[in-house]
Image 1 (cartoon, rainbow, N blue to C red):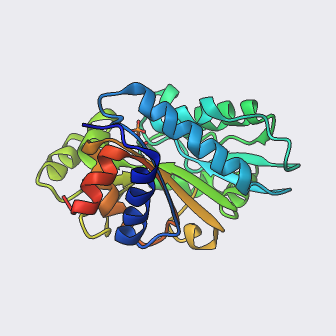
Image 2 (cartoon, protein in one colour):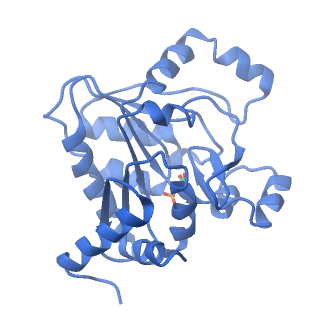
Image 3 (cartoon, rainbow, N blue to C red):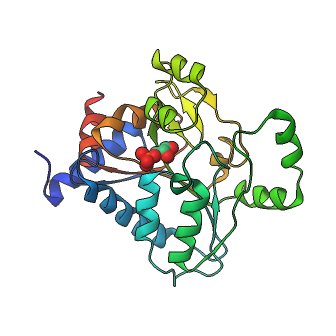
Length: 255
Ligand code: G3H
């Protein structure tokens, strides 16, 4: 049932823009829940978009996840802008190393032939260590770069899926099962109205920092993520969504 023509895709893109109230939306044909190449296609389109947005001395903060990994893999060498810097949006948030923001950040910068800085913070981190580590000069320096990011690119997860995938304390997983958390992005969990219901204790990008960025791009697809995408966009902080046909169809139906 998937595989639309270009003209139908552009109608879908416009309807998603209107539904979410955003400037720009890219929809690729298919459903990334069941077709792996769809995620790769989202990555490719997002990489092309990013390349056009880059400017000299620009800083790009990136999160982790398999969709972001597809973007990293599709990143072309950047010739259009000098001194581009990639940074991870947050410290470790309980993901396996291949899904971590640090890993994606380094992979993306390598392909882009750009610079990068990484965040080394223990995960999870206690309150006392947190206060100490944010004062550590090497961490402080990277944090100051992250907090001034020009472009932020991140995945969106279904809250339960993410809580199970990560090292999440069992009581929290139980609490999420009652449906209180719907979506997840950069370690924050949101309810259906886009309110923060939990945040993973780590350093890095804070929600407020998104307001200072010139562009905030979410990349997330698959019918299974439609509710999560709708919930996350209630925040109203993003201006761009890269998604797929299956998620887009459900988004505009409000399902
Ligand atoms: O924050 C959201 C998750 O990182 C999304 O992960 O792209 O592997 O579904 P995923």
